[in-house]
Image (tube, rainbow, N blue to C red; front, side, top):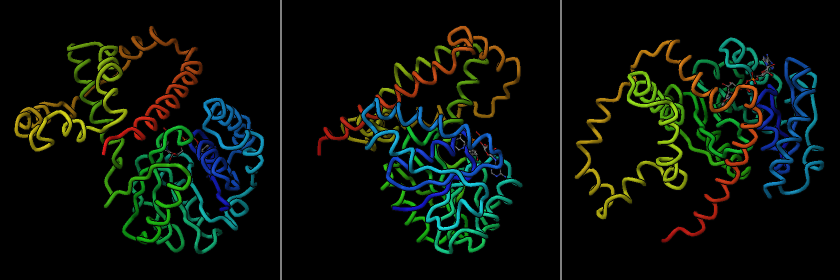
Length: 314
Ligand SMILES: NC(=O)c1ccc[n+]([C@@H]2O[C@H](COP(=O)([O-])OP(=O)(O)OC[C@H]3O[C@@H](n4cnc5c(N)ncnc54)[C@H](O)[C@@H]3O)[C@@H](O)[C@H]2O)c1
């Protein structure tokens, strides 16, 4: 089993610790703020119990937790590691300094991965000694529940590093997608925030309410998208497959793309209006209870996905 190090123990670092430990790996946690490390273990226990209740934990919570230990410094955490996952604050200067320190102390053949959401690897991975072993492995929060991870190298990343990380992530039960070249926001956030930008336009210009947008997703698009993506949806929506769909509806697809107001200049007034709508549905004080409910629904949805995949026709 591998020795993995999680540098940064906030929301994302803690969830990565769950991913590594539940797969049987030893995990070392480090954070610049010792209080974060102290807070991490009880929170990790909550996640493990939740996975256990959903039947998605091999082994019991205590034996998985026993594989996780804190380290007082980056040097201690990464010495002997085969995979380091950096999840510190999204700040370029902090990433550069932390990645450089990790690179100085990690074994030569250790993979060094960053969880960055929106920084291009080429802006900070070169600060790692032997940058061929460094890449971005961008999770969806929290990776303990959502399996997609976007792998993206810089121009200095070795192809073998991407291949090895792809295999490692797959063995962990994650679902990696490797980008062929760098682009801001990788794939998921580009798609997500393109859709959200148009939703802001539709609400901001009075076509519908924020609740209507949420319902269009949960009562409509998401029911398809739980099992098949947008290209597969088009492929199945025409008897002649994707080409048949495009021959009929291609002009509409283009027109919607041209009309979409992804450049819509929404301001604080619209953000406050949506906040008030949301708070009427989910009072801010109830957010933790709703987060726990949402996490349970994600686990239930994954179970439905797995059952659906097993029933796919040839
Ligand atoms: N939250 C998300 O939805 C999400 C999703 C995917 C990726 N990410 C990325 O993951 C990373 C972490 O995000 P998060 O949401 O966990 O943030 P967070 O604020 O919850 O945690 C960041 C942690 O980094 C620690 N830290 C700061 N400087 C440090 C240093 N020099 N050395 C060690 N630890 C240090 C902080 O003490 C804190 O515990 C960011 O790069 C973020 O963009 C976040």
